[in-house]
Image (cartoon, rainbow, N blue to C red; front, side):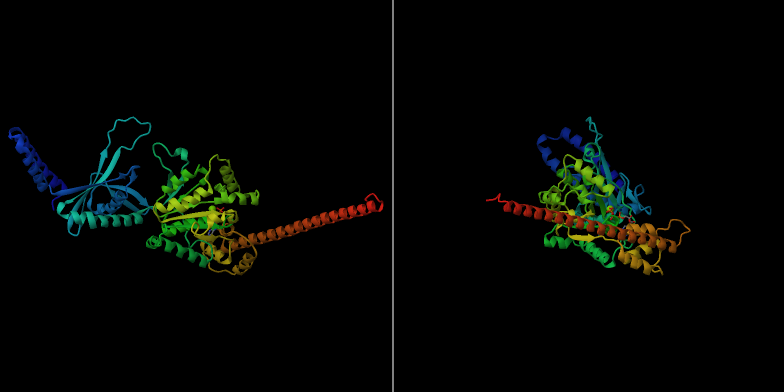
Length: 511
Ligand SMILES: Nc1ncnc2c1ncn2[C@@H]1O[C@H](COP(=O)(O)OP(=O)(O)OP(=O)(O)O)[C@@H](O)[C@H]1O
Ligand SMILES: [Mg+2]
């Protein structure tokens, strides 16, 4: 087959001859006859150059978003380019294992589909605008040019285009390095980069295997996630937006954040960590959420600390609860930060978004809320449909301990396990504390030392709990006695009053 460059040279010489003929023709031909000749000459060019070109630009639309087609083509060609092209760009090194190659600018990559040959070239326009701007403007516009013979127009614009998009997306999923996004404060949204989210590569080692919790619960969650990720058609059929809400609640250190990482690793999704205290109002919240991509988990941690729960429905409840003191210093700060802001994200803003707009923009998103105080949340926020699945992360059970022992010490059983089991049944200790005790502190420390250190910690917790219980009992007893005293004092006052009244009566002061 003739290469594109060869073909280009031939076409060039033909065109040069035509130009020459055209000049002579313009000079000597009568004006009236020119129209006919022009029509036939166009036909001639199409006959000499029977190829069609289609350009796929990188940036499209009003807001110059990155075109999905461009990305898919880029990924599709990355597999072709490695065998056909000679100049590459190495883009990403995925988890330090493989080099992902993409074709370099102006490199030509041929491809074949059902015996039909096509050519791809990556080109770019340099915008030479002279406008003076405070911010540097991106002046490079890249595009892929697809060239093919006009006879195959239907095949190429139909099934070949589908094939490229599908393959490209598969390659993208295989090669992509997942990201952890955090939202930028809105004062940084304008100007040159205009990024609402900044990202780092997401490389958290947590998996469901390393997560300490009951096996049944774990399997349940895994099944639920799997069903969700494969549920595109199902969600379309029932007319529901392809999203799912999870609420993780439980005391600090029970693995809520670890669970989110395990979920992201399980599904191969990106994570958007949404820090609500830096979001000024509901409009900003909306703008942020609209910019999230498919296949992602949007996380809002400590919802009770970061969200202004001034939705009408909550006002009363908040008052009723009084000022509960937040003990965790990190969360306390977060709460104060949220309280100090002038404009705030409201509960109803968040609810509206989850319910309404969210449904209209893409799918395959999971939204996870975490909290230490589930009782503080408005039932309207956590009802099914908004938060579809509620997961309680609780104190360490024996089953959860076994997972941790396996992770940290590589053991399935030990003679000290029985003692630990009975201690765990009587105490409330978080998996974080168990993990901390199990982790060997030096190379010399063996399994037994770690287990004994855990037993010690458990006994301490048990003693502490017993002490607290005793104190509570003493306090309650004292309160009860105080109350009884007060009551008896009131009683005696009443008796005194009554007796005084009767004395008055006897003395005849009352008529
Ligand atoms: N269920 C668990 N399985 C495995 N490791 C755990 C688990 N729970 C806690 N850990 C360990 O304890 C550390 C703290 O846990 P994590 O940050 O997930 O707690 P959290 O529930 O998110 O706490 P907070 O409410 O304070 O945010 C983790 O780094 C992890 O090593
Ligand atoms: Mg956490």
